[in-house]
Image (cartoon, rainbow over all chains, first blue to last red; front, side, top):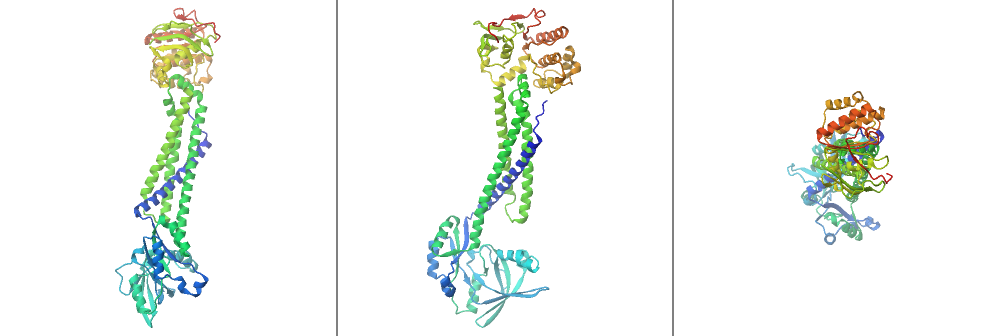
Length: 382
Length: 214
């Protein structure tokens, strides 16, 4: 029985190309499916952001130019077609936070609190804290800044969110000739706002207690809007000389860039798979060409194309399996590595979808090989 | 399973059979095409076997017009009705004798290894079964082609110059084996031969149109 030999170099190139293509494709589908399922689960196609007036030379000298009056807040929020909004109230008294650390002594720093309506927060405040303890929500960026910057430069240990949450520190509040002492506790880490947030009611009481005469207009407004309104909101704000916080728009920019990048990578993986598929077919064709005498002899003996096809399809079927199965294993390894650094709630389901789709694409490639082989053999027997 | 042929001609060989009344070949009878070289004997055998299909005229097998047969139907006929020994043998040169035989026998599993060995001994090639075909002489290759043609059920045995490279003794042995097997199967033989007409006197002659030049 004739053996259909495919040159080793062709085999290696085809297999390597196939591995890369199918691995990248599986990972891309997984990331897409993961993002889609997260989005689908949230049922929330909305965005939270913070807006404030652009600084100018005049506003440097006259601070009122930076604040929003009640009428302005009403006008702007009406114009922006928002889902919800809320102004940032700020502390009008002095706050000093301090903590005693073993081997380092006491560390103290001035702090500044703000508050927002609860429905605009991504982290809830705990309700079971002691009466003299103020829960504080801090930006997630602060923790990253500490862990990735400050702690390294000062030779301090890195801390996890869980450890930070157990830390209790002192808060000394000064104003209206009074000195109040509280305990502070981190309630959670927000990704929406770049400020230290405490409960709205607590801030209201403290402002009343420590600076009853001081009234200030807000300088920032938290806005919650539908993502499809984004470009309209940006235009309106630009017209009104109002800025949107860089942090979130940067994330939005990153999200868009990431999507474009993912689409490009997926297209590239499709291209690699197509080339790999063409190489398999080319290998098959050259095997047919090389064995044309054998094919003719078999045909003359009474073999029909389907029987011959089975013999020729065997090597390319093995080749396809050799590509798809290891590619799935590689992508599973990549997925596990990815999960170690990313916190993703959708772990198995998107991977199952990606696996099924990849096997589907592999099967399509195989069916295409059968069709092409049938065509090539029939062509010789016509 | 009779064969009917009438007015057969091809663009490149000219007219092979110029007969408005069909030439009818009946099962159980043996025929010999005895025209000189180059008059289209091989072409007619290939046409009956279904390898030549660009002909004018009528060819029916078992009252069925063969022009309408599909590739699959021809494959079916070649494994159960028509068996052939090609003039050029058409063996797979890089395979062994046994591999060539087995490749044919795999289609129908018509004979077992003992029968293959028996036929091989009848043809004096029993010692060659594991040799590569490319290492054998034309005479040996011809006997392998004859052996191969017996490894399937058949109703018609088509033999294209099957003894061209055989000596008288081997020719007689091969002819005896082939006619015996054909008789056992109730089959007919169509042979093209320019050399052995002395030994085939009981075969019915088919005269091709000798005006064409093949």
